[in-house]
Length: 80
Image 1 (cartoon, one colour):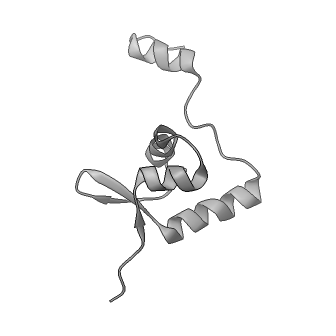
Image 2: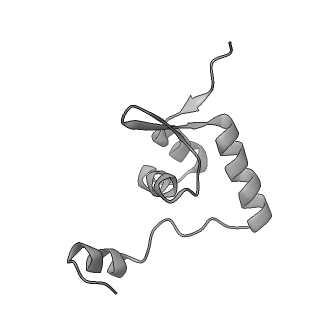
């Protein structure tokens, strides 16, 4: 059996030239597929290629996270 190519969030971030936190948010939102190994997420080459295919079709990536003022409001326990 061939070993799957599993990439860490840092490796994916380096390939995409984005912050590792952005990759983690995309994983949490389901924008980028992953597999869970214990407490860690890994992205297969196939999942990364599917992400690129989607990017080519749609022309952009959805925002990585709500606006910062929305996140601050959530931390304070209020809704925007």
